[in-house]
Length: 275
Ligand code: SIN
Image 1 (spheres, rainbow, N blue to C red):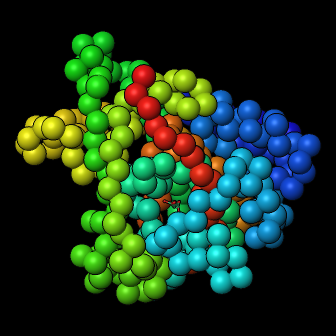
Image 2: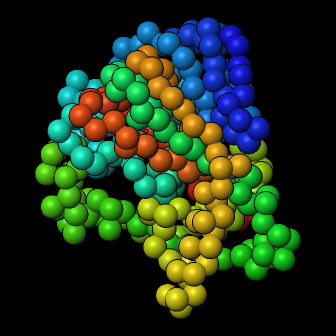
Image 3: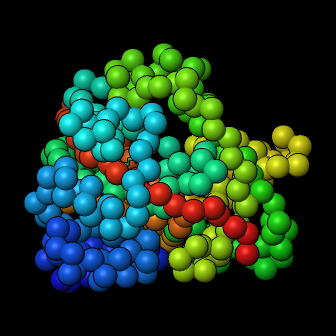
């Protein structure tokens, strides 16, 4: 297989690999650990093949809110129809941050893509952390932040198009709040990285709202620098896997009038610890 970095910061494209081949797994996993985001081009996969690949990383963590594939309930559907306005995952986020044990990684398989657009952008939380000043790093050391699913998937969103269109549901299950360190030591690489995100983080524990809002906004502005990013352009058959403890991601909604249909699987993670 050929592994080509996408940027100087994170992400790699992998050509001539076959996710179905167990003999290739060690090399693919090593690339995932190194680059945090890997895009395996032109895979010929059934839903069972996708689940088989995911299970080599660990048990599947079934998403409570996304509509599942009827034949394979462990696979979540990520869909935007031509007449729908909103895409799933348009805000910067990291999957399952609202869980006490957030998902380690997410795997997205492109089934149908628009003629152009519909890319996914990622950014490196390790690179964003590294670029902070020593003094600022010491200021945020020891802080923890609350994350929640309630304001994104709960009853307050009943009128959102994602809910009325049937793409997202189970509002009654949006009862998770989780406290995680603002700076984590990555469980695989040991690299330090920021672990707050604009979609699911609600506030920094122990700070006044104005203090928490200002600090989070400063971190969010910092993290969104293009220097920390890579962008994946999809073709049907491509599979991208990302590390939720090392990255943010965002679906680019620029393909109005076209269909984009993906299958997503999330893999169980572990508790996140401060350095
Ligand atoms: C997601 O946020 O998991 C979906 C990303 C995408 O559709 O590009």
